Length: 166
Image: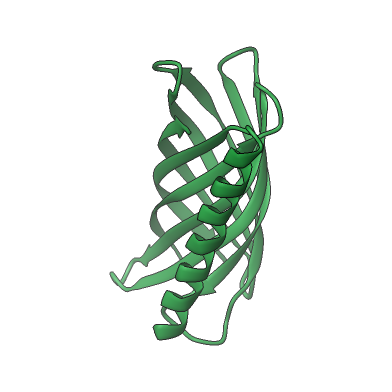
């Protein structure tokens, strides 16, 4: 458990370093908190999943972004036992037609329940992004995770997020 807290601290340190460095060069930074609720499917089990986390994004232009994703994703099986993973990765995001938001990235899953088993995967999302004001936007979407572990696991969930442009 102490190792996972050290990972989280390092990741937050990197995120805040990126924000500070890019503000020096005038590049916009977007922080988005997000939460998901859905279900996961694998060979041996299915069940409910939920996650909460933060995305720190840099803007390449008005419509394209890239950044770091840090989430705590929890899989609950039919026996009410939880498997918690810290998912950390990089991703690309694009907004089309002013409101359509899509993204893809590579993610590593640090297992907080069982030490020693840390698979990797691909993260995608499709959604509707609505600007609430000049600096704030609201995101509703579909998120999917493809986890290349033993066994192969897919996670499909409904995503809600609020972003702030710094």
